[in-house]
Image (cartoon, rainbow over all chains, first blue to last red; front, side, top):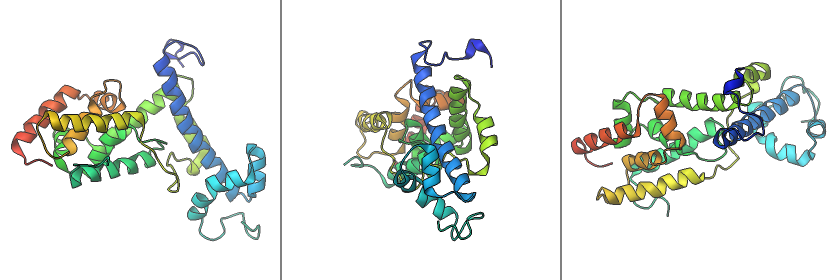
Length: 85
Length: 170
């Protein structure tokens, strides 16, 4: 990483660049959350377990991710046999 | 209301813009998505002008991702590494059950598109007006994506005028 081209995190170097980094980070965070929740689900974790680690309610994590993940894994995903998804 | 006077082509380009936004993980419709939508729908004067300047959907998408990657890099994060570490489940796509609103920039672009239609003395709002609307904001992502592809807003406007002289409106 070239220090000259790098925004100081939380600094005031270039507000536009700093704000755009926030937008990029938010998009990436959403994608990362979706991927990690899916990985946990496929590994057999329950919604309650996933929610606990994320620090949110089971309902919140279910509402946000269940439809997408179920659509991706019709029937039981690998690692979830008999776990009652 | 927002689609008042839109042609079928320009309406389809906005629908395609929402599909692009979703695929790229944009939680609101950006002005660049309007550009990508025109390329994706691939019809009308806007699409014709862009393609005649060598601007393709694939190249514009890549440039959009490049800008995202550069913004993350500026705060010391590598999108590539995160992709690699997260495996196949990592994708930027916004799930189908989540609504994507218009961003202020996209709204402004569509307001501007209507002004361009009037300025040009047209009765219908076509993809060329949407494109001009998206290109109006010099700080907008559309302008930057096209700059990255080596095409300026002025060049596009010239080409649009040229295509308009040769084609019926749409």
